[in-house]
Image (cartoon, rainbow, N blue to C red; front, side, top):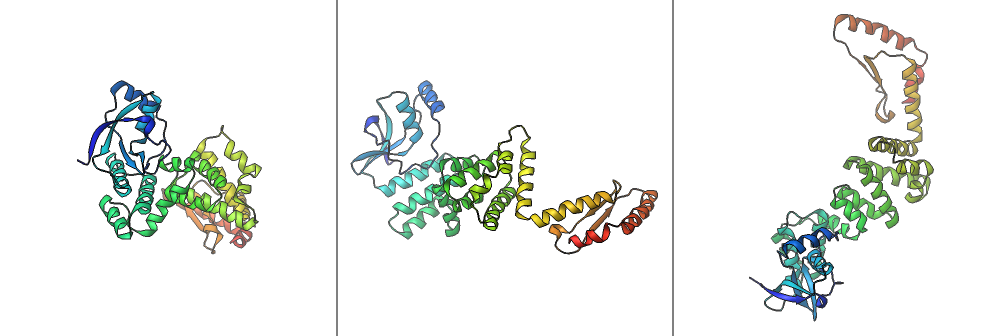
Length: 319
């Protein structure tokens, strides 16, 4: 066992040194209450580095003990003088022992090991030892999460924001990224819809030559974002529709005209006319539903009405 249990003075621990912190900064009130009732069941790891006492694992427990007004606490301390590389490995091992690492914790672990490793071989060996991603592209994506603001990191940890979406927000100014992340997290979009929203915002920005932040501040979009009285799913649908229509105004206009013309055809409930996806190509689809011979026969009238309608040629020219 590389540690021994000792009493340490809390005032002697450098509270500002978070070199080995892998988890998010959380509210420790509940933890402090638990420690007050049950005691400190699992002592943090504290090591002496460069003449200072630093926390290696158990940052929240140390903070909880401080909030309780303790002067000292029990800590696991190395039996022999520790090096930063040992401490980094202990920090990752302790966090991994708590359960599977989150994407953010994995990114922080990779960055910590990379920064302290004596060389690439030592880093790669540690990655293999802890079962961390070994592909450089995956490592880069996860490590980039460490550079995001705390509010975005929290959204990723809470699974309200996909990792790939958070990584794409790195391309935006920080204030803009925070605003987009907040909007996506609040509306609880799926991964595909998150990608769609970010892509539409960036394409509108390039198309109109304005920052994404300016797009977000558009009155219509701001009203959608702040409309707390509307169901979340409806708000999300309206937001996506607004961005799509703004990004593809010609397609949006064609879609509206197609819907109007379709309505003029007065199709029965068992007949449905669909335009080519994105109005690319000329393949319209007419779907006829029936459950017996008379219903099928009635579709003769439907087809004749469509063929004779004056709106048909205009509809073909929309694609």
